[in-house]
Structure formats: C-alpha cells, structure tokens
View 1 (cartoon, helix red, strand yellow):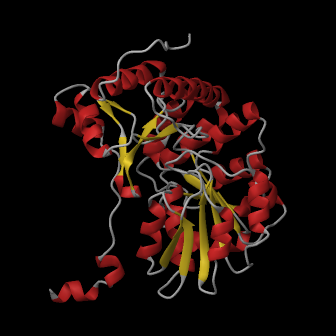
View 2 (spheres, rainbow, N blue to C red; view 1 turned 60 degrees about the vertical axis):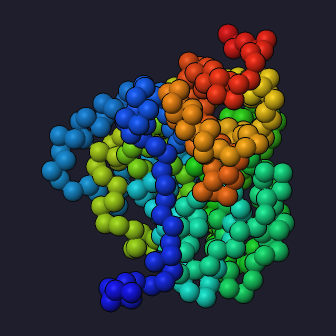
Length: 381
C-alpha cells in the first residue's frame, strides 16, 4: 500500500462512486444511432422559456461571484411556501443537502437509516462521512416505516426518506408519515426527500390521497425534520443544480456553514427565480407526465409486465431477467434507460416518462428487443 493511500480513511477507500445515467453523446458514439435519454428523470420539455431568458441575461455578469446567501431566491421560496426565510437553504442540488446532513450529523460509530432500493446517494453520503447505513427491506416496493422506526438505536442520528421513492416511484401518504414521526426520538433528524413532490401532489389530487404534511410541520416549527426539494425535475433545471431545503433556522444555519461557498451560481439562481414564475410550464410537464404514465402502464401491461403505480416522472419495471444487457440492446435501438443493478435490483429498469413520441419509441424498441408480439393497445389521443 502506498504511503499516500494510508492517509485516506478506509471508509473513503472502499466507497463506491456514483454512476450517472449515460449522456446522449456517449450513447450515440457507442451505438452509432441517434438516441433519446429516458434514464435520469429529466423534464423532456426542458426549462421554462422565462428561465432561459433569465439565464442568458445573468450570463452577461458571470464575471461576478454569485450571492452566497441566495437572498432573492430564499425570500421567494419562503413566500411561495409560507415559511420563514431563515428556514430555507438553497444548495447546489438537493444532493448537496443530503451530503451536508451526513457531514454534520454522522461520524464513525454513528448510523443513518433508510430503505433498501432507494436513492443511491444516501449510502454514498453516509459512508463518506464515516457513518454506517442501515438499509431496511421494502414492503410491496415501498418504504416500511414501521420497520425503519423499529431499527432506530442509540447510535442513530439521521433517517433518509424518499417520498416518492427513487427508483420504485412509490409513496407513503401523509398519515403514515405522521404516525412515523411520532415514533422518532428528538435527537434523530428525518431528511424527507421530496424531489418529486410536484408529480406526487398532482397524482394525489387525481387519486384522492393526502400526499404530504411536510410543510405544515415546517410552519409549526418541527425540530427534527428537514424537507428537501429541487428545481431539477418539474422545473427542468437539472443542469443548473439548484436544490433547497426547509428546516429549523438553527439547523439550516449549521448546514449553511458547511455548504460549499458560492455553490449556487448566479446563472442558476436567476434561472430558478424565473422558473418559479412560470406555472404554466410546470403544469404542461405534469399533465404530460400523467398521460405518459397511463400510456406506459397500459403498454407494458399489454406486453405482460406489471409495475407499481408511479407517483413520480418515471416507471419501475421488474423485467424478470438481467437488466444490463436489455439496456444495452435498447441503446442500440436509440433509447437510453437505467438498469438498476447498482441499487440492488439487477432484474429491474427505470424508465423516465417522456413526451408522447419518446414514450412510443421506448415501447416500440422494448417490444422489439424482448420479442413481444404486437397487441391491440394503441396510444390514447
């Protein structure tokens, strides 16, 4: 072992890095065909035209450092969600908040808890801090909150809950969260990751479900809850890296101290501010997503594949065989999807809901490579 290597803690040396969805350019170079990306849960319509205009204007002043406190955006978020400005922290994507929570709360000898088959950043953030991660088995492709509550011990400091869950697309409703929080000790922080909340709220309105009480808890001053959200999904700003969290002023203050200085660029702040004002753009994405979910669910069922109902902008499918070769064959047909072996689900794939045209291309390509005979189901118009 080299001397330098001895300086790096073992928990960092053994850390598995994050593997992102394959970029379109790379896939096209590998496959020699034009590709569409349905792997990373991005908005197929891109950012709001208002956001693009604001981004271009802000780029003209890119020689200046951004507002490190993101004052305008924090105030706008506080106004929008009816919380105090000091309860809001803006970061470079919600992943920065996930990492910083682990950074300030965990160390060797302490642990975090989450579910198996959940957001792949949780294990990375936990282990990078030296903490241990307890992963509780799922129940029906969803979080088992009772089992997570039972797993809390004297060394637990942090619980990660993804609602909706990535990659299964499932949720626990507001009442389930209420009961769970009643069982969590005050010295354990619950990080409620609502990255896909826009989609879940939309589906909840059509399905007669109460999705979340998270913001009510924030307004009431709940001490051990942090709510994480992002501009990457419904607002279409994944490339700008803008996330935000709600929590107590004290905890947000500590997180602000360890956050990377100037981590949210002036261009990103301007784009996010403008995106908040374009509700029609978000509504278009949500309407399209709901229609796409219906189409993909029916089309996959017609081919013999069942899926848990999604509450997000992607579909989780157990295809009953190793998914990585299927993903490679789909890429050769021009469709990039996400095989889920890194999550511990080697026979499952995650497919982003795209435009109607993209969804049709995926179904056609999947039917072809899986050699499924064509059925009667047609795209609803």
